[in-house]
Image (cartoon, rainbow, N blue to C red):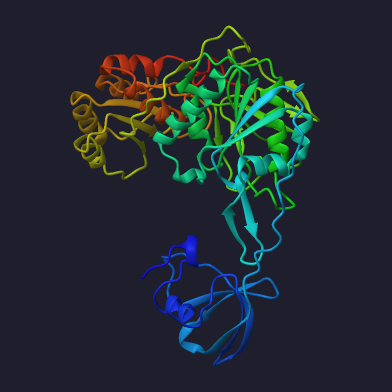
Length: 445
């Protein structure tokens, strides 16, 4: 029997047998006598793929150690897992004179707590708990929270994007929300932001995705500041569309508001991990005030007369291929054979791949697969007319996507092939600037 990480800490085999025979659980404080001496600590969870030869134990010092099961002479429970005090949700009185904002929770670090006994981060906060954990929100807006999903963002799929888009449309259709805030894990938040940018057209209000790099109960958490910035922008901004609200720097003084189709996560752990690409943030929220920073894009104004057009369909049969020297282009043949409907190439420089790819790309395009080109460079845009390689790719039928971010291009391709009936319409739509995914100019700095 294999245990999942969710119920018994991921232990299996020898580890599972030992814990079961002693009626021990993850979180119990134990004394372990080994051939090398005595160990006191707390049993920690393990991943199912980890070796079953060891117990993971957190020592009193805070450090973790692995104990070889074959060297254990005895193990006894000193104390059962302490669930700790359960704090009731704070009942914050509704101020109906404030602007009303829908808060949709989908999961992620912003909706997580850390178990300080084991050191593991777990999904634990509902939308209402988020509201209660940041009581300052009650001075900004009348929050209407709802849990839609409880997933880390790496588990989200295009079908989830459709679900989120439909929920946002439902909230907006109710007619009494000044804006919508979506709490989301940061790892794929830029994919979801791009997806909603295409699925939710002609938005009458702001839709703001917000996340956290550090869980909301850590002293260094960015969750509260990001949430307050997102709610402030959603409730008070004159702009409409899809945006991402995350730290503008490493300090807590400013939250950057990024256009949803022009942002990506550029750092694994910094609080200012998100950056606008080929652009500057549309605004900052600082000390509760919105400061517009850029007029680079044609961002719609908030309007009660705007009628939302919901187009939530996505087709996941799209492949993103990052070119590198030595890439086996047989992957293109494989993708076509597997039913792939579009391929996004992340080419080098101005939009190049080796000429060895040409016959594979030609076959794919002749088979009705749309092939588009982005650049793996972070800054700049595709220019496929400069060198012979680019011109040859254009002759084959590869579609250049200017300065569209490759992640946004992948999402747009999924949306495009699901919402067009023929390859030429799809090719044309990919080159249309629908949600500021293509910029007319790029800031010098």
